[in-house]
Length: 70
View 1 (cartoon, one colour):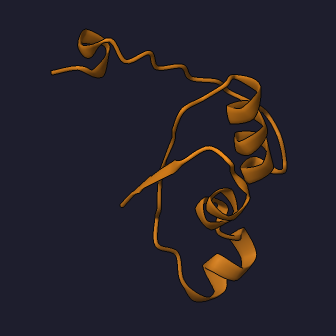
View 2: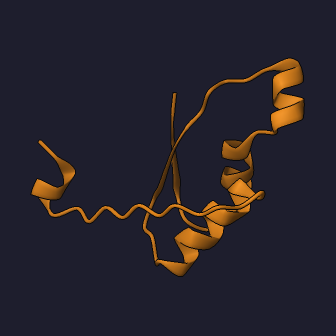
């Protein structure tokens, strides 16, 4: 069953920014979101050091609950 059929309102927003995690946290606060859903790509080593870990940053800085999926 789709979330919308159960009365769950889903919004999507596309933001162009170099600070991805900060933009996600700001958009969730601005829109009064109840939940942030993110996927983790499980980067390790050099890829994680270069690309950062956006999901971890959102988890650490958001007042809005975060659901992390693999």
